[in-house]
Length: 103
Image: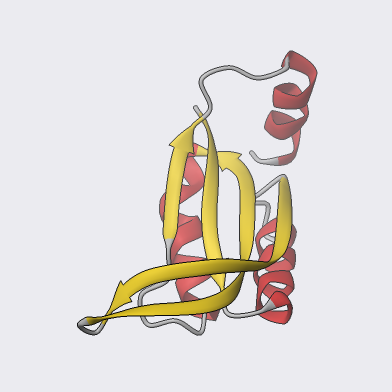
């Protein structure tokens, strides 16, 4: 099973650090970083608004638990957003490439 994982980060520097770490450790084949997204969320009994960077991580389902552990080790947030969505279908060559990189 292939997954896309979303992780929001405090800033681009943190996002790049996490993305590089995940790719080096072969927990992700590719990570996209979207900078300066507007996030509105409920935290500590009030609505918060901030700018964040978003990671879009391509990985495999059997790596998700380890990916969570590694992200939480580096991440600055006490409760980081780490959510995964199954990839229903994908281009065969891309998925084969992902299989070859993430073992």
